[in-house]
Image (cartoon, rainbow, N blue to C red):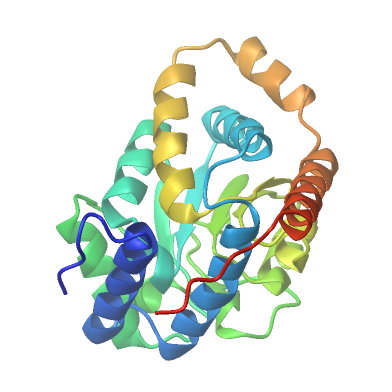
Length: 259
């Protein structure tokens, strides 16, 4: 589909087209399209741009991943469809493993996503087929199945576009969990150690830039970043930003042009 460069919703439409293409390839499920629509609503509320509270969370997330002994980036269908090359690049910069983890899991879909990531430069993808032989305790969806070489032994797990059940379960396993979630009220956002309230298509490239910046920092400098980070404050700032923006919009004159 050709989207004119002048179209006011160009970026949003490009994202939708990527997801539709991912759906056609078997990477994204229909439920993932619905989930994206919910997230897009919250993106409107934060102005469809990366705000200061997200930038601070990105810095803390990258610091945590650089300090990790065994970092893992968990990938679902929507993430694979939207930022496959960026995920591979970020994993390389952070020396992190990439693992496929799906709520709507089939062997075919696992392999399709793994092959798609490999097409974008990945050399090893965990969590596919028999490799997903370990289990997260107290979790009963298909997300419970993880790789014994990946999420099971990870100390830091990044979970873009996650569901709250697994975030809570991973926290109970004493893992540091980094979430990317446009909804600051979600259980995922509230359960994670670090929550980036931003669109994944903006957050991952920002993380790549921040990883390049922080990669040569000393361990003590990275630890200081984490020491000064407060996830509860991040979520509060996100909610205050949304509230302030809605109040400003509600008090201004909104003109609808009907053609």
